[in-house]
Amino acid sequence: MNNPFYKYSGSDLLKNPVVAGLVIMFSILTAYALSLGGFLVAIILFSIPVLFYALYRLFLSPEIGLSFIFVLNFFILGISRYIPVKLGYLMDISLFLTWIAWFFVYFEKRMSLAILKNDLILLAFIWFLYLLFSFFNPEAYSKMAWFSAVRGIGLYMILTIPLIFLLYTEPKQLDKFLMIWGIISILAALKAWMQMNIGPDPWEQKWLDGGGAITHIIFGKFRAFSFYSDAGQFGAALAHVGLVAMLIMLIVPERKKKIFWGAVMIAGYYGMSVSGTRGALFVPIGGGLLYIILNRNFKAFIIGLFLFSIIYVFFRYTYIANSNYQIYRMRSAFMPEDDASYMVRIRNQKLFAEYLKTRPFGVGVGHAGSRAKTYAQESFLSNIATDSWFVLIWAENGIVGLYLHLFILGYFVGKGTYIVMFELRDKVFRGKIMALLSGVFGVLTASYGNAVLGQFPTGIIIYSSMAFVFLSPYMEQKLLAEKKLLNT
Image (cartoon, rainbow, N blue to C red; front, side, top):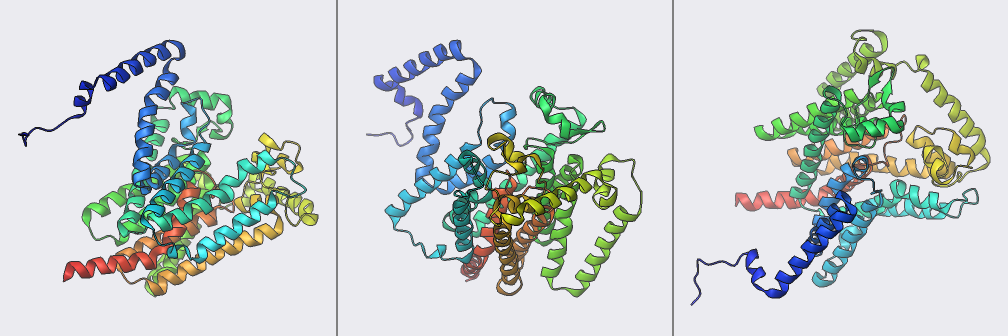
């Protein structure tokens, strides 16, 4: 008779001589590999069983893959400072594996694909088709440049948005996405605080000494970059989460949630300030203005305009707190005529305009700006900084591609505004979607000055936010049905 209080544990497997033999062999091989290859080899070996278990879980629940992608998105570039391995394509692998796992689940459960009949997915598909057409651009001679650059511009968009529609359709999954974003952003701000007050760690210092200091130590002032790729991306990303957290904090009724999102807001704006990224300031300004409009509250609109006017006057017409480097850097964004780098950008844009007059489809994806220096060094535009995201799109895809890109983004903002103002009824849920929409618009505003939209982690966050906005009417129906069920 079996004892009901007795439970088999994992260690009981070792009673099997085959399993015990495999464990001993793995231990011997690990010790031998350590003696030959050192710490990196040890990490790889110990990762193998973890990888197999992760794949097993992924093919049971593909949404786990999407959650992993959200987390990986924040660390994928910064971690290369510590591990001498290029991990950029790990995102591509993770996305494709998640898709494969979904296909297995789909064929088993015969899931409906009706939810994919959405105009946002159609527009993402049209944009990617245009980028595929760019592969055959006669101006583009490096196919490797296209393969490398197309990922951030369009591939992640067409892979991420449908996955959200298929795997993250529950209101609680939206909260999960927001929670992952908020927690990692707090960690990012803490890391930035350590860089500012304790100093960079040895691996970060090595990165600075290898060339990073050129853009991260300006006039003797350090620009924090946390575990992100650079200070520009860090500043924009933290400004983005700071805005979204502030707007969610205003709407959630629970005290604990208000405290949490208040902490995320403080972390976000702190990160923005210590990054020294001037363009990041336009994320909360642009997003905040849209949020005021979405509220359809005349009193709030007047108060908001008054506050933004005070901010503008403070930075544009005063020199208050100029001794603070962060404030001084942000103030220079409001005085472009006194900024030498801004005047260089204007001259560069004139060069682009002249060169692209006879190239309506641009010079090819990956053939302009800093990205071209790796694979397309002979490209004329590789020696001219693009700076702006929209200038980058214009240079690589021509005026035709730029107009298509702007139409897609404009359509998203326009329909997203309609959804928020006229389709959503639940106050708290509507507030979260408003925050996401405002955050996307804020990043689009700041993208005029910085090419942040298609970079890690902002790109995946933006594409996910776009999907959640267009999914929101469907998600709200589920939310209202759950509330009705609880009240009966």
